[in-house]
Image 1 (cartoon, helix red, strand yellow):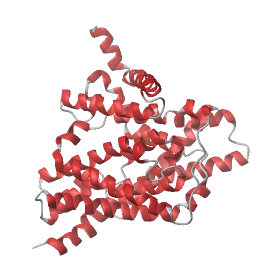
Image 2: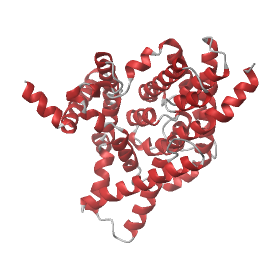
Image 3: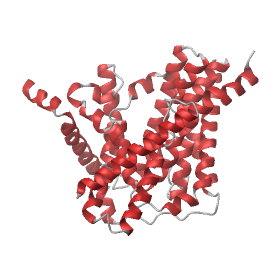
Image 4: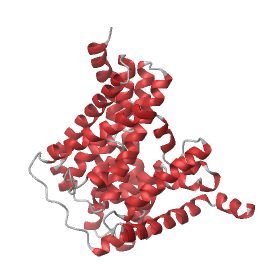
Length: 133
Length: 254
């Protein structure tokens, strides 16, 4: 059933968020620490295990894949609700601080990617994947 | 007319689906005709979304971009943190945990370096603009990490509300430029595999920025970038008001 997939996804996310909040409380920070990350790892482990036991049929999978496919539209909606006006209102200092942080961080990506051997680029997207995106 | 607006308002989420669908269609067409597919449709759609957010913000003076206009309020639900994180987690389905393990060290290092580099960059910019007291430097530095770390740090160290507002603005700018800039710099910095995506997520840290930027670059990289970015704000809130502030006080305090 499709809903089983959605429910499994929601359960993973809720448990991940609770873990993230608990870690936040434990280290004395008013923020969720890694909730989404824990949820993702749980989803990967749980679904791999269920699939092996044959308890995660195609229809259940659809419930997860649907939300994965909605990711880009959701991000576009997110972009349209950002506080862009205030960002630009901050003036040159805010803009420069944000840009510098991006530039310095981006410059470090090639160095960090070299740790532990070079990684191969992903294969080009197939036409089918492009259609989904 | 009023009746139509009323229906759209009452069914805000559905109207949001229609708007985003239309936005994607226009963007796909622009991508094909104007850039011959070189700039992905999703990248254009995100940029259009940001432009609309700016217009909405200027129109209403609110904080939620286009969603502050009543009939577009459904965009706030569709693009809010709950559904965004839900969809991000869903993208992890089918991810190879082996890839994450392989990139674990690079990902962890990227987080520490990312928070540190943003703090220093922000603090230096603050100093260059004449905010040389440790409280202001720490707060703007924290804002350059993310727009959540900024006010958390500013409140903890007792920075002025003007500086806290600037730190939020710095974080918002970073999030917006990461969304728009990622597809443009992706090929320069080798952002085409899971490992560099994990490093990128940790170095940038802004969940919305990374989520948007990687979506516009290659959707398959999203789970890897989001995986590390999700730890960033917490780490920033931990280090900002403590280690980082004390280091600044030690270096620049009277």
